[in-house]
Amino acid sequence: MSSGNEMKVVQAQAQIQLQQKSVAISVILTFLFGGLGLLYASITWGLICLVIDGILLAITIFTAGFGAVLYVPFRVLLIILAIVMVGRHNKRLLNNTFKST
Image 1 (cartoon, rainbow, N blue to C red):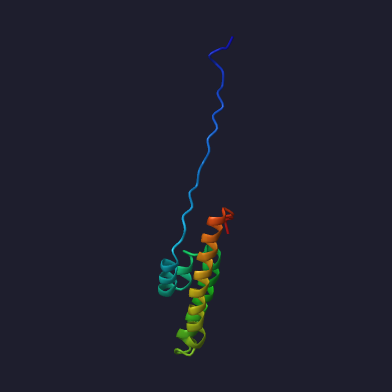
Image 2 (cartoon, rainbow, N blue to C red; image 1 turned 30 degrees about the horizontal axis):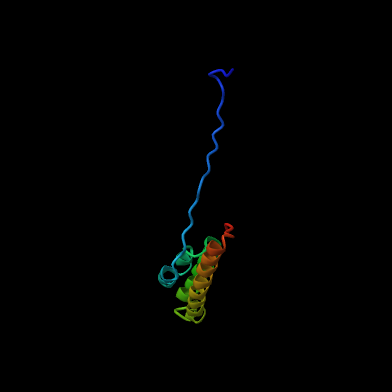
């Protein structure tokens, strides 16, 4: 005999669908916005590079452009880092081994 007060256990599953990131968008954002654009590729590296990018930009401004010797190569390095980070993200998605970073 069953009473009307029985509890039914409902099991809900959340499904998160992760999408691949675009290398082209990552390169464009990083080229235009430096460390801020790198946030698209990797939040951790984006925050780190955003701070470094700001420091190098300040040095460039306060030294009347002489800091560009460091700033320009750093921006190129950011673009390379963006490509690598998007590639890693997409590879983890394909291998189904995504870990939040």
